[in-house]
Length: 101
Image (tube, rainbow, N blue to C red; front, top):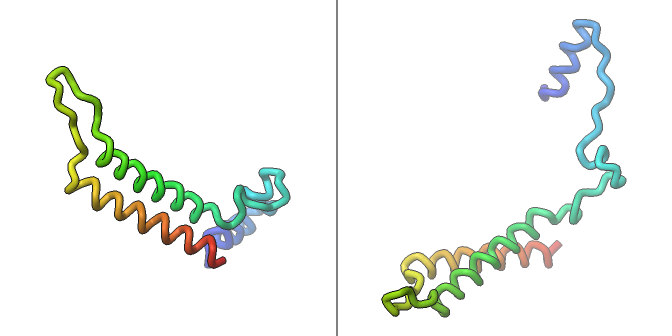
């Protein structure tokens, strides 16, 4: 028994009348469609993965500006390469999901 059904049963026992509660999509007044359709999660994973990949590659390719000592600081490859690979895999997976269906 779901929580909503259990709540409805208990409400009827105590004499309360429940009105069907609208879902968030219907109460938003947009005709029952979600923002960006049913593909919201793949779009978000694509954006996050691409940002993770591009940001880490950019941090490795272009070091920060020199401080007062004149030394440029590069991102540590031990951290940046695995994070860039994770971002690439996430973006590739999300893109494949979007293109497949």
